[in-house]
Image (cartoon, rainbow, N blue to C red):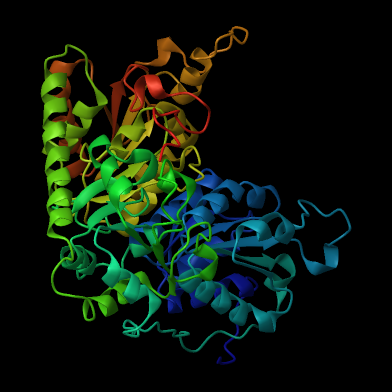
Length: 573
């Protein structure tokens, strides 16, 4: 497993760097402890260390990297409050099922319990949020612990944590791994011809496919689109599953749950079988589902982890990678859809969605006001087809969840926050996404409240992105969602406000190397977007400031009731 090569006084971090390098890690994000050993070890190993200003942002960036690349994102921090600063990032990576490794320093064994500087039971803090947590107290356990952490992160799809206490830095020697630890996952599986899953699919006449985040990096051969054509099935996506399927497919009918287009709602009312591929069926994805789904209508679920099955919904379950499972089904299903009328209905819904989209844009064009939908259209017209949109989940950036205002077609991508919707995730994660996909333009589509929370790391983005990173900041003056909630209360609550109208036309901090463009009116939009992208393509990081109105909200007058809008007909059969 190892040889006896010795290392310097920073032995533990040198060994950690060698394990990371052997596993293919070339970039880490973080803010090292003040002994600088982690930074030194990364430098000597040829690992790029993206120095962040905020530890939470570091984990957000590592999560963005992991979601986009499918590989383990790594964050490195110090101890004590440095670790507690990462907790929101760990929450987000856990909810996103993103493979992230957090490495931290820690109090040496000889000082624990003595009130040592920044002493903290860090395992107790992070353990509830990660799939594996360990503190390495003996030098012989360092390499095996790191290898286990990487395996768990990669194959169980979630964050892991390893603490490297200070006393390991003083070891005279530590074993350095002589070779990488190789793990393989079969790319093909066999589904029995008489399995309950296949029998359910064969019996379905009006199927719906729901593609979740577990299909990311699983559909390179476009097998889901082939399955949809074979079954004549409508295809929907969860927010985190976007980019897994080509949304130009005539079977694609938008997002599920909260974001279901009005024209597509009838498909959920009429379906007789739902097939969920790589989804945990969270509340947002199943919002307003008819009560018959999961009771009279079976829900077939495919996940790699049993804990991801939503047992609220009845139906057969397959414990396997979603991509390989779909490929195994294709060889055992009929070549033609069971109900041609259902297929025709699905395709007509897709057509209706695009006709309604064009009608909406035509109507907005006659208005003097600038609308967020028009901003999305301008981005679509100006940016290359393979751009990746990294989103938040506030009052107005939610417009990007509405299909086909934004569509993942022709190679376009999407990265969204999880069901936790941690504020500031998208603004910070965009840099991680950009570094994971350096050949593609990345657009962070964010509100000004979220952008402000991540702004400490704008210099980090300028230094490390290499350009091609565009922040579209929708400026309503603060926290628009909360302001709308407050405004809709029957009785005022003091003189509180969550937005400042005077800051709607604010700009980002003036930072060397950061270029800013402000959209002042509707007439300048196309030229402003063109200018912003021109600067990005030339190697700059650009902020496109877009003043917006609170009334330009996706749910409009329906916004009320806290976490979710109270939509007409909620809870109906």
